[in-house]
Image (cartoon, rainbow, N blue to C red; front, top):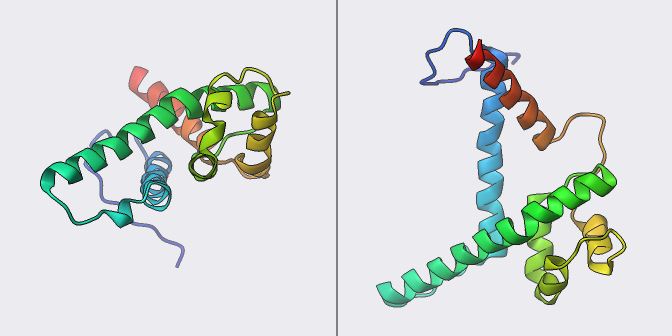
Length: 152
């Protein structure tokens, strides 16, 4: 219908529609993160048990997510970007790693694009090359623009 409405608590008049539109894209990123967790870490299959069992189960799953993200995804994202100029997809990476847990030790030591596990990541876990910018490129641009506005 050629129109968009956004409700926001931002009251700075220098932050315009395009910036709010860019920030709104983060909402979809958050939705994708939840979808990734639910689909790959079995949050939909929480069993009936005591409160203590549930706390242990959820703590273990969230701990695994944090470790995989901090110790694998972030360093491998930097390596992929530096060696191939491509971007590692969080959703594809988490799907791949939860189905290939035996590759975790090798990937934690990975520092070369010649590594077989690294080549598998390039095959299964990077965003396709597109003419339009991907989420990470758009996010970096929006953050830089907002940072520039706030410094002015």
